[in-house]
Length: 277
Image (cartoon, rainbow, N blue to C red):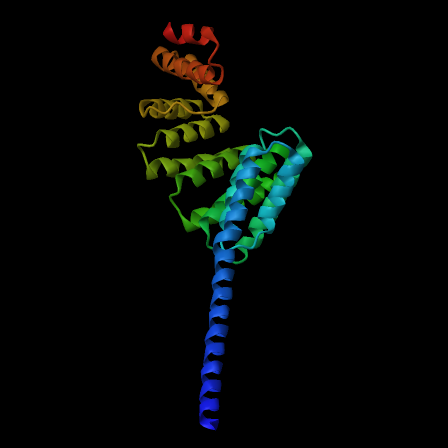
């Protein structure tokens, strides 16, 4: 009888152990699903809401949720938030919110950079954010910060054209046009077929009072079928073509300028008439 009792007890104990292991495995699986699937989904939902909402109080709360998030993909979500904040900064008129959003995401990304010093995207994005902050709030110190992060990004990826263009723009805004020229000459050497490289170099030449070189670079850009994408720069190129009495260049730039204006104001028939003529 004792042996039967002990055998039953042993079987019962084994069942309890199996049940305990099953519960433990379910708890672990649930925690992993929550951590790697549900929480990131919640953060993703916050990101979608941030993009759609226009109320700045709600927008701020959502941004804080994303910044504070510690999911496995938190850094990637913060980079996406940074991109949205970068573009929103020129569209939102509330300067207090714009400044808060830029400073908050900069702080969050700099904290991430402490653990990921060699991350190109973090360095490039921080350069963008400091450039935007400097251009909006006229801070020389922020221009220097932007330059530092862009330079670090280029150390990690030396021929990254987008970073070279942004750094060149920062040099110009920071009243260092010769540095912009030197950098963008290198960008052209790295990719002579890139119309944007020639265009950015032309803008740097203009800032450095080198009109002949700027005109030649604009011509190279136009030959590569790149006509710029910033209205003020297009008008500068057209004015230079006019100054050099280059009618073909003037016509091409005029078409591009009015085509851009038509996209912004598709109901304006006058733009269509000008392009047709």
